[in-house]
Amino acid sequence: MIKKIMLVFGTRPEAIKMAPLIHKLKEKDNDFDVKICLTSQHRHMLDQVLNFFEIKSDIDLNLMKPNQDLFNLTSSILLGMRSVFSKHNPDLVLVHGDTTTTFATALAGYYASVQIGHVEAGLRTYDLQAPFPEEFNRQITSKLCNWHFAPTELSQKNLIAEGILKSKISITGNTVIDSLFWVLKRIEIDKNRRDKLHRNLDNILPFNWQKNNFVLITAHRRENFGHSFLQICKAVYQLALSYPKLNFVYPVHLNPNVIKPVHEILSDAKNVHLIKPQDYEPFIFLLKHSLLVLTDSGGVQEEAPSLGKPVLVMRQITERPEAVKAGTVKLVGSDYQRIVKGVTELLNNEAKYNSMSKAHNPYGDGFASERIVEVLQKIK
Ligand code: UD1
Ligand code: UDP
Image 1 (tube, rainbow, N blue to C red):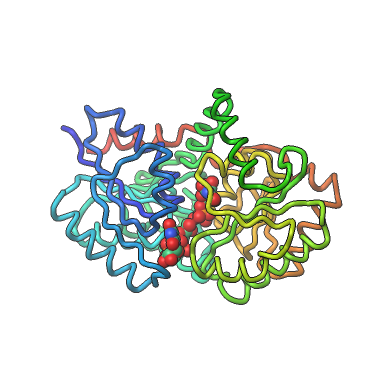
Image 2: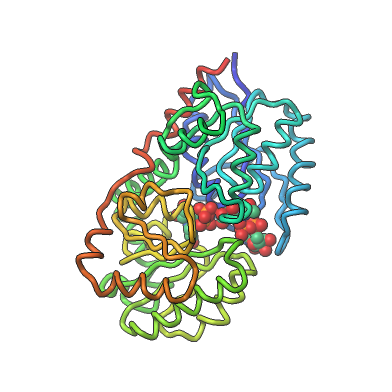
C-alpha cells in the first residue's frame, strides 16, 4: 500500500535539511505519496531554499509576520495544522529539528493521532535557556514522536537516556551533509556555475575575495538578542579595527532584532561587509573560500568541519559537541573579550589554526536521506 507522507517545515535550515529527503522520497513513488506542507514561519529565506532545490509546496500556511512572537506563531501553527491534518489525513508526518514549526506541528500531530517521525532527533544541551526556545522544542518533540532519526551515536544515546525505545531510533547521519555534498559536487563539476558564483561574489564584495582572507560571520540566536548581540557586534568591530587588512563578511539574518544592532554598530566599519542572506549555493561557496567562521548557527557548525574551516561558536553551550571534541569547533560564548581573544588566537597562532582546520565529518557521509527512506519503507 502507498503510504501518505507529509513533510512539514517552515524555516531556512529545515528546508535545506529536508530537501534531499524530499527528493529521495519522491523517487519512490510506488511506496510513497509525498506532500509538502509549509508553515512559512520564514518567507524570503525559505523561498530562497525552495527555489534552489526546486521544491514545490502542496500546502502553504503562509504564517510569517514581521517580528512575530512565539505566542502567535505557536498558536497559528497549531490551528493551521489541525485543518491540514483533518483535510489530508496523512499516514505519517515528518518534522525536522527544533524550531517552533517542529514543536507545534508535532503537538498538532499528537492531538490528531497522526504518526510522527522526527528528523535530526536527540540533539541536546539540557539547558532550556540555551538555545531558547529550541532546547524545549526538541525535547518535547521527542516525547511526541513515534520515530526518531538521530544523526549521531550521541544523539541516539540522549534519546535512550530519556526512555525512548532503541527500536524506534535509527542512526542516520545528518541530512545537512547530503545537501552539502550535493551542492559541492554541482559546483565542482560545472564551470559555468562556478563562473556565475565568482561573478556574484565579485559583485557583492568590494575586495578581492580570491586573494584576501575573510572571516565569515552569521548570528541569529534569540537568547543572544539585546546585550549579547551588542557584545558580538562590538567584538567584530574591534577585530575589524585591529586587523584592517582582513575582511569580515556577514550575511545578515532578516530578523529585525538582528538587523538593527548589526547595522547600527557595524555599517561604518570599512572592512566589514554586511550582505543580504545568501542563497544556499553562494553561501556554501563563501564558506569554502573563508579563512574561518564566527557563528551561533546550528547548521553552519555542522557544515564547516566538512570543509576544514575552524569555527568559533558564539554560544556558551552546544548541542553539537562532536566537532568540539574533534577540535575543529570551539565555543567562545557571546561576550566581547572571549570573541576577540578567540579570533586573535587563531589569526596569530599558525599551529592552532592548522590544528583546527582539519576536514572531518562527524555529522554524516551524505547518505542520511537514503537511510531514513529505508526505515520509512519498513514501517507498517
Ligand atoms: C527561527 C527559529 C530558529 C532557527 C532560525 C533559523 C524558532 C523560534 N526560531 O529563528 O530555531 O534557528 O529560524 O534561521 O523557531 N524574517 C523575515 N524574513 C524571513 C525570515 C524571517 O523577515 O524570511 C524576520 C521576520 O520579521 C520574522 C523574524 O525574522 O518575524 C523572526 O523569524 P522567526 O522564524 O520567528 O525566528 P528566527 O530568529 O528566524
Ligand atoms: N545559510 C544560507 N545563507 C546564508 C546563511 C546561512 O543558505 O546567508 C545556510 C547555511 O548553509 C546552513 C543554514 O543556512 O545550512 C543555517 O541556517 P541558520 O543559521 O539560519 O539556522 P540554524 O542552523 O541555526 O537553525
